[in-house]
Structures are given as C-alpha cells and as structure tokens.
Amino acid sequence: MQTPIPEADNTWILSTVVIVGGLLALLLNYIIWKNRRMKGEYVFRASRMTRGNRIFPAQVVITKGSVTLVQPQWVGKVEESAHIAHISSIQIDTNVMFSDISIETTGGHNPMVCHGHTKGDAVRIKQVIEQFQSEYYKAAGTT
Image (cartoon, rainbow, N blue to C red; front, side, top):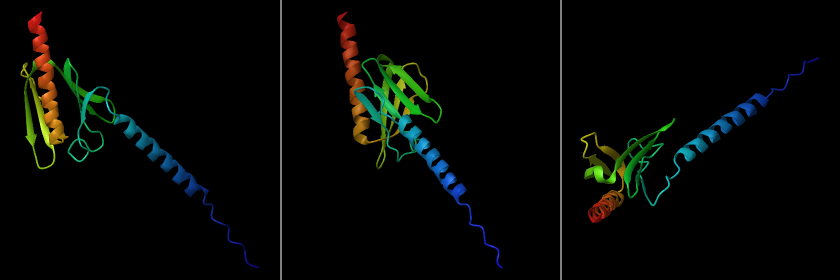
C-alpha cells in the first residue's frame, strides 16, 4: 500500500504575492501623491529624464511676489525662495534637449539651480520673472 503524497500548500505563495503587490501599490500611490503639481498659474515642472528629477521632479513656482524652487524628497521637500525684487540675474544653459536654469539673488547667496526644463519653459520662466519685476518696480515708483 502506497502512502499518499500530501498536496503542497500554496497559500503562502498567494499571500506573498498579495502583500508584495499591495506594498508596490502603496509605493506607487505615494510617488504619485508627492509629484502632484503645485498650485499657481506659473508652475514649471522639470523633466523626469534628467538628473535629480527621476522620481521626484523639481518645480519652479512664480508668483507676483516671489520665485520658489521646490524639490520633493522621499521624506519632506527642499524649498528655496527669493523675493521678486531680490533676483539679480537669470542664466539659462541650453543643452541638446533640456535646459538648466540658475537664478541668482542680490544677497550673494548660492543661486537657485534647476535642471531639466525644456528650452521653452526656461525662456518662459525668465520672461515671467522679468514681467513681475517690471510690474513691481513700476508700482514702487508710483507710491
């Protein structure tokens, strides 16, 4: 008489697949949540195809009063901000596909540097900053 071979218990494989799939779904959801577009009319996001922007691309947010560079990280974010009147120069370094932008302030501090914007976005960032600076100084001259 032969002893029956016990059937393999495959529930642990299914459990492992479900747990790993759930963790990957949570990770993907977190990355999507961290990459949401900032609020504002003038928000420029760097391309994911450039260094430093693969998972969490940097964003430049321009308002009438300030320019802010937001660089998300796994935990938190790094934010650099300068008042529109304190911006002294904007340097655009155009490469084959993408441009690097360097925004210097009058305080002599390290410039805000953002890699991976399209040439059109880089030029538009410069135009918007110069437009807001002109409006700021015109309003300051009338008071």
